[in-house]
Image 1 (cartoon, rainbow, N blue to C red):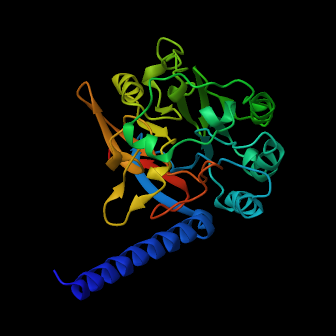
Image 2: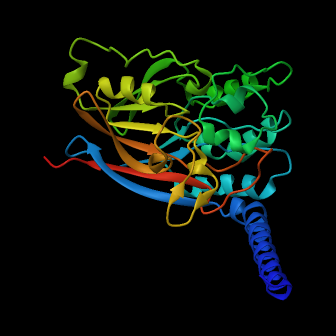
Length: 314
């Protein structure tokens, strides 16, 4: 190979490298400055109510990851009250900073006027730390994390949710009645921290199963073991978050990671989980925020989910 030909190849390689670097920088700038603030509402319809019942609108919120100063996110959250949901379901990871509780509660104040239920995620309990992003591709780590000095003021947040009338489903089961229909809930503490303790559904009276009711299971992180024990008890719907929809996705392909053992193609959206001969609708929210240590989204816009539950065919 002569020297001139070698110089041409090196120039071409240099141009390609510069192009790749520029494209990567542009994508990062778009994801960190623009897409992570492109909040939207994904709408889904499920025919799971008993025949003859009026539709129910459930607003599913997850992974808000509030930090001080996120005024745009706060305004958008307040605007969601215009949807007038029948029920708000919050699947955790509301915080990303110890000074974010009051901004979060203020942003959620209009929605706290509606009935609601909630479960916590790990970032409700503990502030995030900077991690190697490539570690996510290896799957969940078996190494215990050091949570010393990282605890967030979650007790105040939970107490405010509860005094607003939202039901705490942290390893608990509860029932409520909406428009004459009984909703039976079961929820667990954060499975990512292995704090989940499944308690089943409310037992009620000996004839409670004969009355119209709907069973809804709620968790932050959709680990397969959790989805399996939920499904074994035959719920009508499972709601979860945690995955951020992959957060950084490949257009036309989707998520590369789910940050748990959920298959990546289920990292966001409405699918059906199958176990023990049962098939149950599973809605995984892509969430509204990011860890403050990785404030970027790409091909995965932040979302709230509005689920309209309609009657089954008679």
